[in-house]
Amino acid sequence: MNIRPCSLLLGLLLCQNLPAQVLSGVSSRWSDSFVEWEIFIQPEIARGEEEPPPEEQYGELKLRWLNVRDDWSEWDFELGGGRGTIKQRWKEDPSQWELRTYEGDIVTMRTAWPGDFGEWRVTDNNVTLSLKSRWTNQFDEWLVQDASRGRFYLYTVRSQDPRDWVIEDELDETVSQPMRLALIFLTIYNASPKL
Image 1 (spheres, one colour):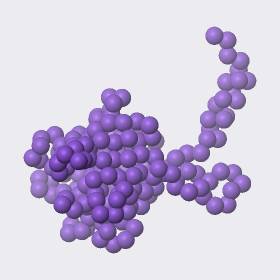
Image 2 (tube, rainbow, N blue to C red; image 1 turned 120 degrees about the horizontal axis):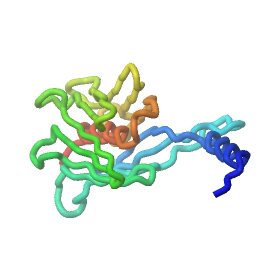
Image 3 (tube, rainbow, N blue to C red; image 1 turned 90 degrees about the horizontal axis):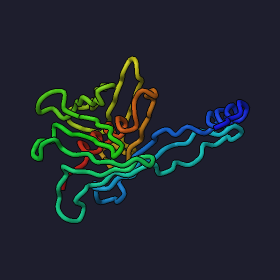
Image 4 (cartoon, rainbow, N blue to C red; image 1 turned 90 degrees about the vertical axis):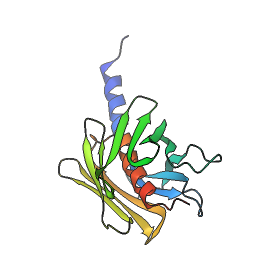
């Protein structure tokens, strides 16, 4: 195959000018249910534009057994074209979870301390992050603060209303999309009423 150097250079320059996509929010699909969620991105402002473009839906997360039973231990997701599952490692133990993409990525999530659902360790065996709730009695704000990888902050739009969340995603590129999804999942799972 014969690739001209100027064609390759032009292709690389065009790829660099594509707007980046930053996770910006997550909302329950229905106002009275916490079993289906939509994940949003905020595209960057293009050169010459003054206003940021509107948020776009980038993915979704929903209970696997939606119409069969209230089983909160298995979830399906789609994020940026990638798909997979999130499951409890053991059916009766909500302190350990595993996210698996259909491409083969695996992220494990477990509580940092037995019986304490306010702090979690999330790892893909390359990167390990600690996700903590700001409060012990109210799960409205969650934060990852890592000196080498950045910050990931989630908080509710309205106090004590877990239907809509803002995401401030300032993690670097070493943190994968599945890892970011695991952080989102833990936040909404722990904050949602399980009725």
